[in-house]
Each structure stands twice: as C-alpha cells, then as structure tokens.
Image (cartoon, rainbow, N blue to C red; front, side, top):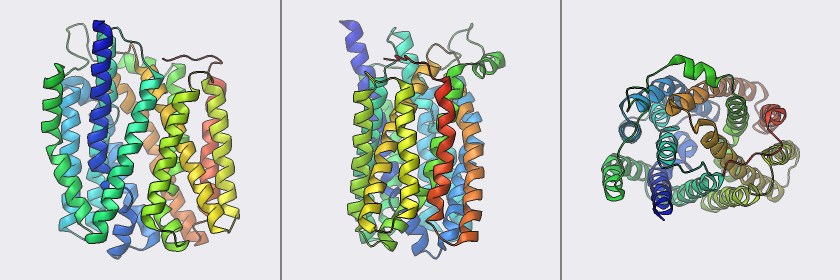
Length: 397
C-alpha cells in the first residue's frame, strides 16, 4: 500500500513539475519566428539566430549534468528557470540580431540545465523506493508536456495579438516564480533533493560514464535523439511561416491542430507500447515520417499539405514518448544519471547545431523552403540505424 502511495506521489510530482515549467516556457513557442520577423529579421537569418540556442544547449549540457549530480537536481532545475526568465527579459529590452542571438544562447543554457535533470531526479526516487521504470509514465509525461505546450502556446498567440512583448512578460514572470513552486511542491509531498554523491561510496567516476558508451541503450538513445532533433528542426522553426504566412491558414487554428496531433501521438504511443515492441514502433514512425516529408516537398494543395503537417506532428508525439521511455530505461540503476543524459544530449546537440548551419546554407542556395522537407527526410534516415540495436522484446514498464 505504501509503495502505491509513493509511486502516486512521484507521478504527481513528475507531471506537475513538467506541466508548470512547460506552460510558461511554451508561451513563445508558436510565435518566436514571427516575433523575429516582425522585428526586422529576414527569414534566412532566423535559423541563424535559433542556432545560438543549440550552441547554448551544447555549452551548458556537460556542466549541467555534473552540477545536477554534484549539488542536487532540484537546485539545478530551479536555476534553469531563472536563466530562461533572464533570456526573455533580454528580448523585451533589446531588438536586434545580436541581442536576439544572445537571448537564444542564454535560453539554450537554461534548457541544458533542465534537460534530463527532472528525469534523473524522478528516476532516483523510483530506485530509492524500488519502483521499476515505466514507459506508461513517460508517455503520460509527454502527453502533459504537449497539452501544456498547447495551452501555453495559445495563451502566447493570444497575448501576441495584443502586444508582441506580452507573451514574453507572461513567460518571464512565471519562470521567475518557478523556484518557489518547486520548494512548495516538494515540501508538501515530503520529498527532498537528490544527487549522485549523497553517499561516500557514490563518487564521480569517469569510468562509469565511459562504460555507458559501451551499452546498447546509449546508442539507441543517441541515434534516436540525433535523427529526431535534426529532422524536426526545420518544421519547428518555420511552420508558422510556411502554413500561416505562405499558405494563409489561421495561426491559432494551425497551432491548436498541430498540438492536438502531438498529444494524440503521445496517447497512441502510451497505448501501443504495451503490446508492440520498440523495433516495430521505430520502423513504423520513421518510415511514415520520411514519407510525409517527401510528400510535403512535392504536393501543392494547401489542405493536403496541412494534413501532412498534422501527420508529421502526430508521429513526433509518438517518437517523443519513445525517446522518454528509452531515457528512463537507460539511466535506471546508473549512479551519474544527470551526467550520462547530458552526455547523450551534448553529442546530439553538436550534430544538431551542425545540421542547422547546413540547412541555412541549403536554403540560401535554393531560396526555397520546400527543399528542406527532403533534407529533413534524409536526417530521419539516421533513426533507421537504431533498428538493428533494438531487441525484439523490450519491456521497460
């Protein structure tokens, strides 16, 4: 009975922390590109600005993992929200390429501090209470993440219609108050901070991390992250320009539809992961994603293109759930959880940053956004490399 009670408390903490952080952070998710365009940034330069976010993530990831394992996951989690709040404050004060880039750099560092930190904290709680990792919980987390992104994004687009800085103020104030919320929530649920070095026997050992590189789960997780992140960067950055400015659809309608598709994809993963193995899910998702991108680059009917966009988002929702479940499984039982997750993300971000510069060069050469659908399809081909590594039967629940 006590085990079920603790498991429920861990679930509530994980989902509520995810929801509150995402609600405020996502208020700019639907209109970042439009905000930059409104402030005089050419379309081709928007991806250059966004690349600084990836550089910030790359710079912050390895220190983030070490700090989370060394001083405590909750301390680093709250620090991340304050840094992101600062990046939004810069967007309010300054309106040019340099400061937009610096804001994205800080935003990336804040995301790096957050990346994997909450998952490491929760996985440690699961271990301490002898609760097995759960793909269903990871699926629920992705559903909550997408649902609150939908709500926060719609709040942001509504506020953007009033004033272009209104959603930034909303995000900045919410994230500045997030540390107080974390303290109140953990106190109420009677949880304390955790870290890898809470005991004398838990020392920071580089051999532990090198050993992680030799594990099957590491390579599955790395290839999934690289293929997914590189393949989705284009659609995440330019969707509002393609489907709103060029095809003439309503911004709020498109944003709501694509977030609903993401949520539906998360729900589908949660359902089918109980009876379909990871190899089958990966093959289905990746093959469908490549096909959807290729068709998007060839078709001209705006309604068909919108349907393909929603299919892409649905598949992204399924793949997000799969990556979260794989991460939970990969770090369970490891001591330096945050450091190991940040190492995976660090390598992935190097490749994602390189892909952004490549994509920017390709767009300048062809001067046509549609060519990037084919480039995205090529990036997703990397995910196919994970299939030989995945075991036929994989149960992480």
